[in-house]
Image (cartoon, rainbow, N blue to C red; front, side, top):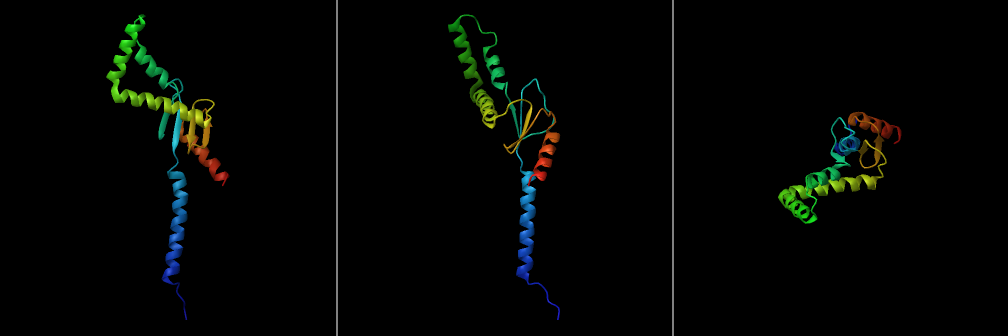
Length: 143
């Protein structure tokens, strides 16, 4: 008499296999990639987040452009520029400084840096895809 596996056993095996595949796939698919650089070190490729460490300086330079030498007049003009920029300018300033803070908190020591999952860092590689490939190669070698 030939015996067939029960429906419960087949379902359990299928669910287990699906779970393992899902776990393996999400480790690669949901890897968050950050680029940390400045305008002097361009990067090619796509990332989830681009942090330009010189962004605060450039925003400040925009606000300070052509200000008069008289401190009172300069202050009034700067205040006007800040209010004209509105919420968009405030978001740009906040995002610029948050990026610098995040890079500092990760301990980034040089640029360009490609960061995956806020854990793995490749320095000096201007190509995001190559940096991510190197990180994935390391992750496979270090289970």
